[in-house]
Length: 444
Image (cartoon, rainbow, N blue to C red):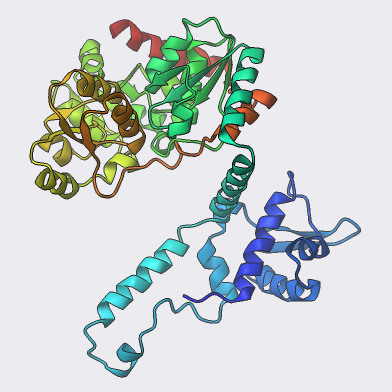
C-alpha cells in the first residue's frame, strides 16, 4: 500500500487536534498548518474530505476551528485511509493481473487482507499514545539513564516513597526496584513498609490492589493508560448479571480484575492459590472471572462446578502448543514450565504449571539446567539475571505485554516529581473489594 501526502497530513492534523488540549477545544487550521509546515489551503481541502466523512466537525466564531466528531478510540486508521486515498489496493502483482490462474494470487490476496485488517485495528487514540511514547523515548535519550536514575533516587527519598515493580516490567525498571515480584506479593509487602508513598510500576488493577490493602497511603501509577485487557473484559455490571443467572453460586475473581469487580466477588484468588481458594468456599457452583484458561486449570483440581467467564490474557492465549513443541525439539533436555493463563492444551503438555513466583523459585532451586518458559518475556529476563549459569528459552514469537512495557524511567521520574497519577477509589467499593482480598490472604 503506497500512501499519498494526503493521508500523512490528515493523520498529523488529527493528532494535532488531540494534542490541542482538554475539553475538546477547537483548533484553527492556521495553527496546524504552521506546526506541520504545510499550506493552510491544502489543509482546508483535506478537512473538507474529513468533515464529509464524519471524522471532524467545524465550529465558527473568533475561537472557532476544528474538533473531532468522534472519540479518538472510535476513529480507525482504515477509515481515514479510505477517505483520503483513491485506492485501497494493498498488494499489486502484474503477473497476477495478466494471468487468471496465477498460483501466487491467493497468497497476495491473503496478504492484502492482513494489511487491511491491521489498519482497521488501529485507532487514532493508539496512534496518539504511540506518538507520546516516541516523544518520551526522545526525552529519555536526551536525559541519560544514569541521570534519570539518580533523580528518581533523590525524589524517592524526598517523597518518602518505595518502588514496587512487577516481574513483567522493562529491565531498566526492574533494576531500580525496591521490591520486585508479582502483583499481590508486592501489595502485601507494601502494608509492611514505613514509606507513605507507593509507586507501583505495573498496570492499573495492581495499583488498585495496593491501594485496597494500604488505604491510608498514596499510591501512584506512573503511566495512567497502562491497563490490563483481561481485567477490562469483565465489568461489575456484567458480573452482577451473571450472579442473577446463578444465584446459588459463589464468586471467585482472579486478582487480575478491577476493584469494582472484586467488590462484587466473594473472594479473590491468584494463579498460585486458585484451587485452595475454591475449596475453601465448599460450594457446588463457582462463578470464576475473568480468565477462562485459569478456570479450566482450577476445574481440573477441584470438585466444584466451575462456571467461567470467557476472558483471557492475550499474552498467554497466543502461546501455542506447536511453539512449545518446536522449542522442545530444539532443546530436548529442557523442562517445560508455563503459566496457568495459557491454553488448556499447553498447560496439559507442560511439566510444570506455575505462577510467576513459582517459576522464579523453581529456576533457583532446580538442578535442571535448561527451561522452556511459557510466560511474558520480562519474567524470563529476571530469571536469566538471577540464574546466569542456566538456559531459558521462550517461544519463537516472544510473549510480550505492551501495557506492562509502557512504563519507562522518564515516567517514574515524572510520577515522583509531580506526584501523579494518584489511585483514588470510592469508599464503598474499597471496603467490599478489600474484604475479598483479605479473605484470600487469610487462606494463603
